Length: 174
Figure 1 (cartoon, rainbow, N blue to C red):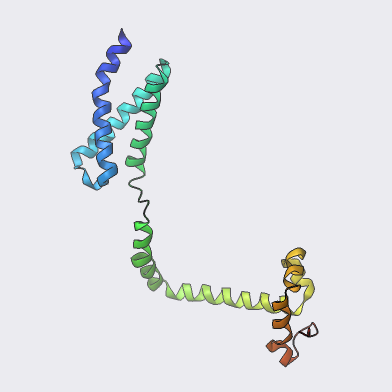
Figure 2: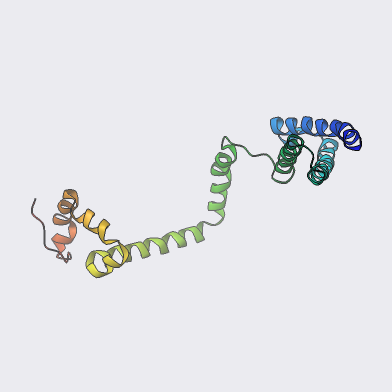
């Protein structure tokens, strides 16, 4: 039968592909030689074509699932590289990359921080002075929850605004 001969002929390539993938997943793509990486990409194309043939010929679901898994693993190694699940890349970026970027762009970073802080201060001031503005920004249920809190009343009644006469609301006794 033609299908059986095709399976017997293709199986060694699939096994070779799986062995290369196992090494790439364990050691990273850097652990492979240039010839092995070329062979990996070559076998990826072959396995993808075999998957298409298996689906077209309606071979068993076990063969299709095996080839599909092999193709997906191959794709992630070839096109997406190694994924470190332990956060080493993020940690490396935070240690080296991020400080370098901040040093190179410190003027723009400081300017952005300044604009943010000025906008935050203006929004806080408007929210403190104008109750209607505050109601536009904060949902009523959250606003009533905060205002009913005893700690909020204490802070509102003994804040600096009371000393300077800036608070629009009368002080609340304890």
